[in-house]
Amino acid sequence: MELETRAIASLTPHPENYQRHPQAQIETLRRVLRLHGLQKPVVIQPDGTILAGHGIVEAAKAEGWDSIACHVYDGPNPRAFLIADNRTAQLAEPDLESLLATLRLEDAAGALAATAYDDAALSALIAGLEPTPPPVKEWDETAAAREAETWVDLKYRLPASAAVVVEREVARIMELCAYKEPGLALERMAILSATVTDEEIKGE
View 1 (cartoon, rainbow, N blue to C red):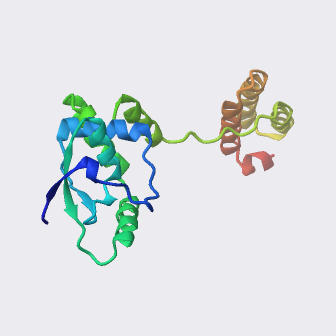
View 2 (cartoon, rainbow, N blue to C red):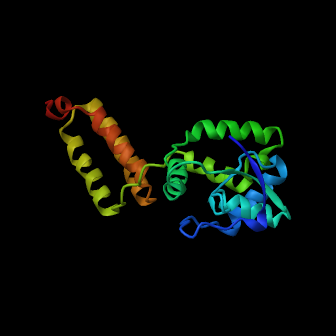
């Protein structure tokens, strides 16, 4: 690949470039240039129309650069290349767990800023990887209490050993109903159902 140094003032954005470069991205690119320099050339047409690297050219200009390294596109379809360059980058699928592990290494070395991440972006990545808590079942105090009361009626038809379990658990469930603890009440009901078998309910 042959490179040419072109004056930034001689380069022009492609009129069909559909990518927009918000100020936040330009500021990040400026930091990257300060820390790493230019490691990938801008791709241009012979007349200086930019095909790839619009954002980096803006950042270099903001940094006060007068010139920048360029590769002159030598393929058959510059417009298609403009789209393909953007599209192929979008098709990448990041392994976020691996990314987080690498970022933590750089953060520990005091080099997080050199990755184009900051503390806020790192925190957002960590938050995004945390498991989503299961939805809490909608609480219906009356229905829960009614279900618990059915167990009170059943205890009179249970063997003595099972009746003791039911009496203790129902008291706890009713207490949870009073304090509106849906998750715990439902959990205790599930335990009660599993503890008292159909055979025990039918037992005489």
